[in-house]
Amino acid sequence: MPRRRTISVGTCYVDNARKVAREVLAANDQTVTFYTYHLDTGNSCGSPSECTRQDFVRWADHEATPFELARLQLQERERDAHPAALDPRATPFRSEG
Image 1 (cartoon, rainbow, N blue to C red):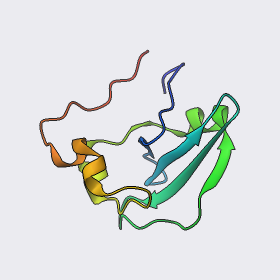
Image 2: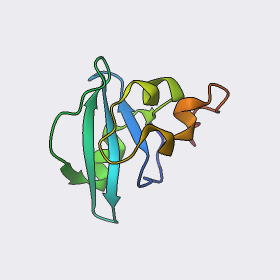
Image 3: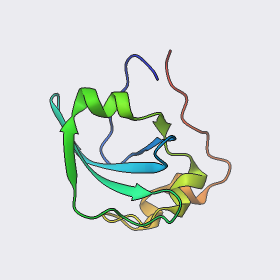
Image 4: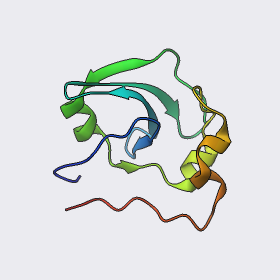
């Protein structure tokens, strides 16, 4: 896990162990609001949730890859709002160490 990470609204982050992704709806210095999705099915887990920014950064293993994005049934936007999901040549997230 990177020591410092920018949390970007509209970006999806993944927890490998839990096999879930979180789509960030809103973020500030204190909290992050997000939808959660099962990576196996792509389905949403329901209503938006919220946690502290610190907990979100600790939770997220990496930004979702184009392959992971393509599997999600995103709530807030059409799939084409995530061009990386449609472009197999897109560069995967690289964390700063």
